[in-house]
Image 1 (cartoon, rainbow, N blue to C red):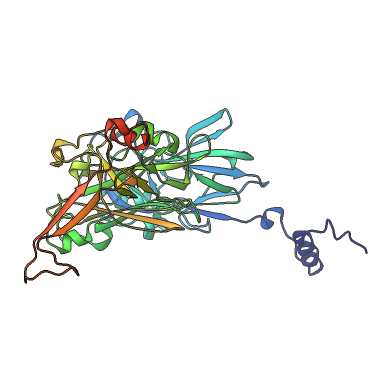
Image 2 (cartoon, rainbow, N blue to C red):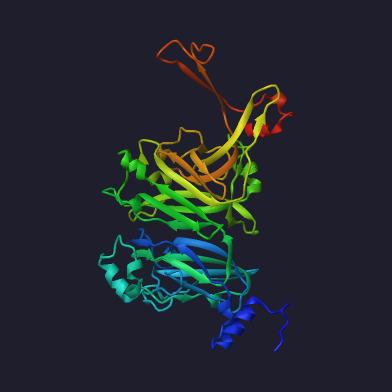
Length: 464
């Protein structure tokens, strides 16, 4: 037999030789499987007051994936394990909305094989078994991860492929609570579709923090919005140092949650940063976050807290430290950027730096005022919390303050004050004839007289 090597692909050759050995290779087996972690487990807890069926349903976890489903047949299995085989558990439902071009389908509850009629009169199947319902209702699972209980308390992996179509699709996944208790196991999507990124808004719920001997997992919580390689986006809230210093005040049962939205880098200066001391800066693009147009976006995080079964979420409800030792961290993949000098004609040279900005809740741009309940209302808003930054490749920016309030965004090209250090009595050779030193630090912001705006307009924008 003769073969045209030009068209004889590696996959075809592999299939041919396997066939000679008595094996067959299905079409789907030649397509790579991608395991996308959607959510980490949320421990079993009581629902917020007022949560119920219908209009009172509350989404406590949500994400939107941008997928390219070029393979046929499409494979998409939702489960608690990366290989797509583990049972899953969600109290109550998983609602899926699929957008393909102009076509929008959903939200549709995809739970199959679970209890029906919990809460009372609810017509939908839930993503949990009667075993879980009976065990959770007596409180023996409260505060525990559901992952060890998926075998008896969960439902079989759910095939999402009937909801998908070939080509570019956007898949929104909401975990819905209908009252009583809420929880979800680890959730993965194992698929032969490829992920292009995520699109906000999204929401990730954390776990309650105890005021009495909180665990390390409670004190340091990660909120992963996109864990895929080269697309990573994560927000971390870390109270470990504050507890160790004895400066932390926690209201028992405080539950942090982080929401996010994509920011168009093209409007950051003209809308969000306008009129602030960061007006000439640029927000940092997160490669794994996409605008509705499909272009990479910056990421605005909002950290809020609830307490117990309260249904109010606010930054002012998060734990408070008397020292600036609460840690906030943005970890992300992103493109390279540059920092330049700002040269003022006939004046000093200023420098650009990096910022991890904290603004008030609901910040839509410009100068802001922090929530009076937070006790931060007398501070300039936005604040730059940055204490360290690493990269390139996977970037990590760390901020520190006494407590959050409550939106965060990473930025670069932030104009820095020029600080001059003078020492009283300094002699030639930089020494003083004293065992004590009197040091004066003087900071000058990079501002220009109005007459000089024509020569260096970027700094006039900085003043606007």
